[in-house]
Length: 364
Image (cartoon, rainbow, N blue to C red):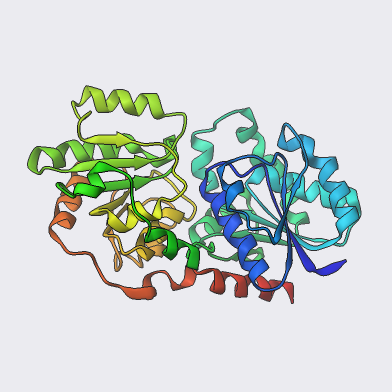
């Protein structure tokens, strides 16, 4: 077993919070003199371009995550990494099974990035419904089960009837030197360039969890009282539904759903207000990134993460989930304020240095 080799396993590097976090984690290990392999069921997605040359990309060429089981086991037998860190529960199951099949001594770290009970209320498919059964069966076989927030850990324990004492909490490595460099780049968008009107920003996949309809309805109330613009960065299955809502509310000239962008940080640094409107989260990466970029922040008080990140409202306003009028009221208030200057106190726990230290403690 090679104590200096670490592997990170994911389905792909498509644009999502967990994928971005795992890229940052890989970079943090590489920066601290580990040999790092980014092992992917399918080597595709926009974050591939962000992998530096000192991190090896291992493509298992599996059309589905389940089909990566035996290629992953073969990789573990041949390369013998000290630890395999996986993310997303279906990939976590495959990581555990592959470790058993390989008969390797690689230590398995499975990470949970979302609130399981909430995901089960809106299952994307039949596999999602079955996932708790497989998690109950296989998670006890992992060397470490890691949750990205206390809220995720508490929910995971309750939903799976899994001992809370056996779940570690390690925040995501969100804030890096690269983030600050990218935040200083220019934004090629007229609303940010001419600065004629304040711009409200949201970032994240266009899914049920993010509850963009509430944000758009809140913006409708804001727009009746103040000239402003709304920009949403992200792709997803709800795109057409959201575009239709914007049209129905007569907001086409004031709302721009741009899609996925490689550098959301430059937008965060220049927006007037950053809003997270989610129904549920695990540890919302974008909220920490917005704080690090110096944005005025508003978030729903959803399970879980925002209350932890914002320290009960110290670093940004918290509003009830689905409360469009309450959200509009807080946006209007924030538009009147100058940006808060909290320094690094608001995001220190989420820096790659701090997170690496916490993982390294588990290696000892």
